[in-house]
Length: 634
Ligand code: F6R
Image 1 (cartoon, protein in one colour):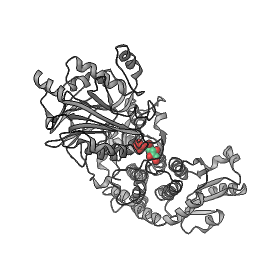
Image 2 (cartoon, helix red, strand yellow):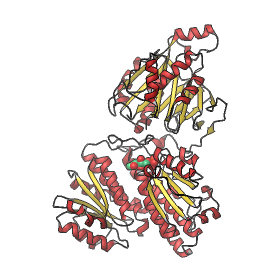
Image 3 (cartoon, helix red, strand yellow):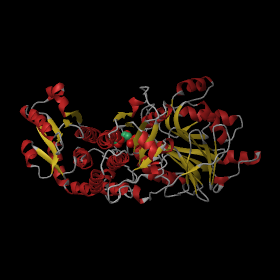
């Protein structure tokens, strides 16, 4: 969840690190830090590393300058204040932290140093055997200064360097000792123009221009410098120098790094005048959906998913689909599974990836496991995907990040085209996942002959119209904000829905919890009578998903039960549906659409509700407390 950046071969590495950290901050904002290899004599930044004389000159004239700050969401401005006093340097690394081991204090902030103060490391992930390593290091006399799992890496590298190893070799040997998931970037005062990077599970990219080298956990942080980027594979180690990248595998053999295709511009990662990324991303949803659909639904409703890389026969042979994902992506999966069963008549279920991974699932080559992940990095989903492969299932990923970790792992991939999502709470990527899954379900329905051409064409036309309906829903933002004003002080909200309305309710509740810090629980409305209804009294507030689907009347019966017990009821309802409006206290109106497609529009008012209540409470909507955009630890 932490962000990593490194740069070499520039006149002002601190500026680049701080700008990069600002773009990475969504990954973790408990604390941040930078380390520069300082050239005490101006111009020494890229001194040679061969020869005893040259080495001793380097030792005399290079050292590490490190600064860290642990002021939640304000650490980068803290570091900015030090910028004018920073020494001359040509290379450095930076980190923004989401605390796992050790509280978010300055001493636990990265970079961490070895005992000599000449090695600095930044780390994302968890070193599972850190206690065992730390015990050995302590017994050998190393002085550790933090409570993190990460610091052991600096000391292990220190030991390897003392044997005369180069930094690249020292990192290779150190990585061999580590258990767990990690992305690491390392600098050493003895090799002042070199960055060394390695990874296992946690992603890391490297890049170069003719005179510069970069390392980062995210493409967005280095896109302003270069598009000549490469993804490190599990276990690979890269030596990045100004203008050059050398990559070796865990055995020390040279390997060709994997070039990354980048379709985003730098601008796409900026705020475009909106007050925060979340509102920008909510308003970008029509475009994100349109882009995701381009070329995938043809005018007569037929689908085109060539990039999926499965043959028609392979797809026809599938007899069961399991969707695995976390959080909002899981809700998208639950919605997609219902569409798949309805249109393609394949048994389909959605499962929480962190549970799926450990339950020893029964799968075979006729099972398709679809992992949904905006980032393509979420560790639970990634390991679920690997487990599915291990069990012999076919695998497919829906991701927003081209060539992401999961995209490279799965047999097939479909990309949403939402552009970078920076706000921690998923909005445009969530809707794009839903619509892309709907296209996939339509595709399978056509392929398997479970939809006749007329039905398929009608569904295709409706899907194509969804971006416009989302724009229409966004035009009603004032209505949604008015409801949010009424609910700004509420501390407990129920979200209720049936069938396709249930995952919508789950998403509405998650958004309100994570952004507004309001206790919000979602229930399948029919389940209320089996227990939760005893919580309903005059103080209760319920948001019901009451758009007109096959279970609309049954849902209204549930609403009557709430009203009879004095609850305040807010309904997401079709525009102009007076009957529903009469029965409830407040309405969040959305354009009417077929029930199975309704989540794409019905989620919009719930996003705005959560956003507006959060803002009314003074919360940071882009960086809600305790959360990180990309969850790369279990
Ligand atoms: C909620 C949210 C999270 C993510 C979840 C999975 O607003 O954003 O629940 O959906 O962490 O992330 P990805 O899709 O990157 O695997």
